[in-house]
Image (cartoon, rainbow, N blue to C red; front, top):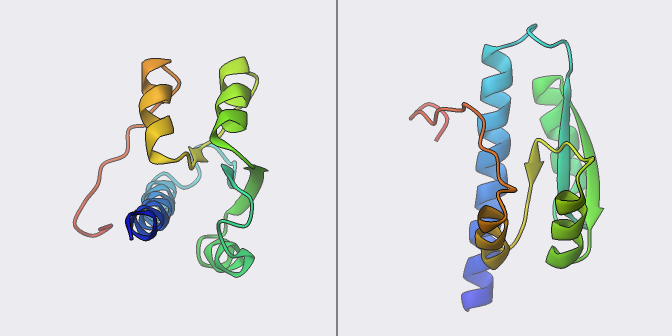
Length: 115
């Protein structure tokens, strides 16, 4: 049951992250000219149909790279040379990444409209 709740929370976090990111992009449309979301995610975690729907609704392309373990994801980000807009680690890895100063939160504001 705990695993099911953790998975549900993780999926909700990804969806909320995409919604927040999409909303922020729509507000700042035209500032960068880059219409790409660089996503670092678990393999088979998001249905490709959902990504296609997101791309059609927002006009932004999702460039998804996948990992098969938290440790592989952590190592790749820690080594540098990567630039992801959104990554999807498990709960315990978030704290480890925080201690290693690998988390960067952009200037996104959550509003009732987004939530």
